[in-house]
Amino acid sequence: MEYLIMTIKAVVVFAVVAGSMPFIVWAERKVMADAQARIGPNRVGPYGILQSFADALKLMFKEDVTPRQVDKPIYFLAPVLAMIPALTAFAVVPYGSPEVTVYGVPIFYVTDPKQVGVLWVFAVTTLSVYGVVLAGWASNNKWSLLGALRSAAQMISYEVALGLAILGVVLGSGSLSLIDIVEKQAVPRAFGIPGIWLFAQPVAFLLFFTASLAETNRTPFDLPEAESELVAGFHTEYSSFKFAMFFMAEYINVLTVSAVVATLFLGGWLGPGVGQFPLLGVVYFALKTAALIYLIMWLRATLPRFRYDQLMRFAWKVLLPLGLANVFITALWVGLRGGT
Amino acid sequence: MLKDYFPILVMLVMAVGFGVTMIFLSSIAGRKRPTATKESPYECGSIPVGTARIRFDVKFYLVAILFILFDLEVVFLWPWAVLFIERLGLFGLVEVAIFVGILLVGFVYAWRKGALEWQ
Amino acid sequence: MTEWILFIVLTAVAVGSALMMVLNRNPVHAALWLVLTFLAVAVFFLVLGAQFLFAAQIIIYTGAIMVLFLFVVMLLNLEREREPIVTGGQRAAAVALAFALLAVLVIAIAARTSFPTMAMVPGGITLTDLGVALFDEWLLPFELASILLLVAMIGAIALARRRT
Image (cartoon, rainbow over all chains, first blue to last red):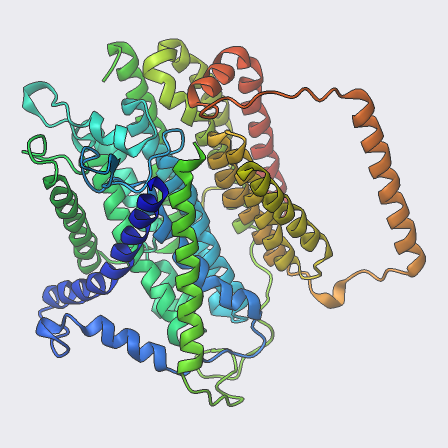
């Protein structure tokens, strides 16, 4: 029975995450259109909401061009590898109050390995580099390979900052479990300031958010697809649904990043009235995640792209020292006060 | 304990299954009319020059090594961060300050040698 | 029972992919088989209850070290034509020497090591156990590890900078 409920939870979460992807794509196109005073997709379905499904179908029936001299096994493997990290990271993210149970099993998180927790998100993020590097290498195209190596160097550079940002939160929470981290944020601080880590760890929040954008190759860190210099970067030679997989991976990543930021820094499912009505937690979590997704789209509409040397210098010379300083100041603060 | 990781396995299997199924479906759904030009590597419309497997700058290699070292450092800090409030306290801070301090020497060296610059 | 099945499956994956790594002629493919070996080892740690090591193994070995390996094989771009010419005699000698080395290692380890069996900690090894061991009992090796990392960092920079 327990395994059955666990499997159902995993399947449902997988379906919701994968299923919300077309709507995020549509939302981004609408937000971008709005920012550029255009209308955006409005033909397929009400407000064009079914546009993504039409696009997916089209891509499905497109000719699948496999260029000569590609490394076939890796060429096919890479798009699958690109999707896996974003989809599996969600396993440890609580999306509602753990107090809600069915047959005594909490249903609002898939799993909570206390000794690993947020490390799973981090581990899976480190693996996302493979999809990019292998796609670029297998394609047998100069632009692909250069784009892939640039993206890979970018992703690993920002990963250090990502780890240091999480350390700040873990120091204050004393646990790796995302449920514990959320529950730690329930206690308000002095002057009635909410206990969410956004206020207590603003530097960690900025670091994490910035590094996540770089990890997922979103603007202003979308160098891999700098069309003006690298054609389409690592997925230049991909067509049909294999191209769609990279596209989907990017948008599932947007969702995952937003959900993780909402959990680590905005208190996850917490909100007024959750104590009386635990079911409200899901709504709060969804709203916070949606707000962050909107923020990411807004940034894309606003910011220009970094130059590559600026981007690398920013990771190593600004974010890394800032992350280390944040860890030490937090530790000093926590240590001197004997708690948060 | 292993029970906690069972759902992760389920999601992993689904992710792989989803990816493989979609690629397989599209490979039978789309028609295929390969021509020599269509299958050549894309190089902005010109005829491709030389091989794509060219050598690259040693910079990439250097960044990867620096990344391994700092990643290791962060991994060492994880158990420390978890235990800090409950058990380690300020003495734990001194322990880690020495550890990170030694690594910072290397960081300063890298900075001074221009290893963090990208030209 | 479950543990036995897990053990057999994991061993098959780990050893099988390690063999594929050795036998593969394409360096990038070989590196990917090694990634699979490392992932199998990570799951081994998990089954043994070392959950933090499971995550650390993925983060360090598959996420960092293998990325460096991939970079190196891609950057060096070992092409098939550049493969060294190996005669049959050399190959036979290499195989014989490899087995001799294996025999020496096995005998040495089997003769000098006792293999204590330990009961599994119920619920696995926690971060508290690990942290206490690392920051209390083995504090000096922990601090010395940073010097090792420092040497690696300076060495890499010195080597990479020499020619530019």
